[in-house]
Image (cartoon, rainbow, N blue to C red; front, side):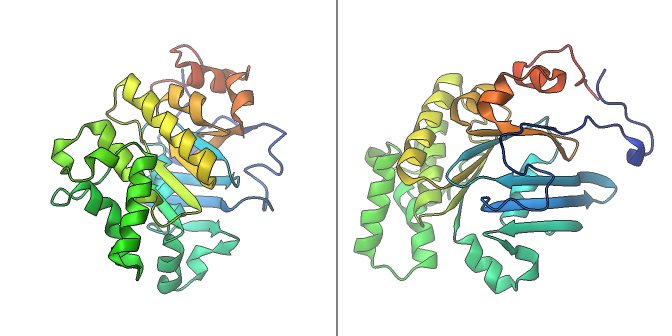
Length: 283
């Protein structure tokens, strides 16, 4: 059986946070000096549905952190809070040391330019070619000439292996190619933080592995802080420097990936192994 749920959500029993000691101050501390992004005691409800229940987490610089957890547990909602698309009911979101909800909207808009986001389905504009999709942020947010934009776009398309597809429409390329085009678009403003919302969604195992190879290759070249939300354990095992497990709007484990996958903790071991037997149940 999983954590017991009473009729009153406030009485719900959640597993305690399992934290690897090697991660500095850890997800529940007041601050972590080396993090570029952190959330503290984050609470968020939609109507009567409470999604975030005091979630606290730090994201390490120049590292890939994978966020895992069952559907509906708050992973994508966390990303929307980080980029300032959702305001928490309570708690704080700090990016580069600044509380983003203590800013004016104009400042948040400028801050978002330091993010790149790869959406689940690539979120390409159907009426634009692959090239124009990737060029879109540069045309919207910079004063670069078309020649300068072309150099950047072609370099990013080459980086993700799509230089031969620049003139194709989104409906003329595969799902994996759409994800890579979305990744190229996420990179054109040279972001310091890149968010991936289930990049492997809808892809077969081979294309998932190929996309993971591209993520690792680009990260090795460009560095930056990558946050990957996924259900795919193989993706987490392949790309992660750090792993965070979220259950019912709280962090229940956070630590280096090698320690996570070697953990003997029943909750962590069950989730990362995909076992049906253990403390995590259907509820």
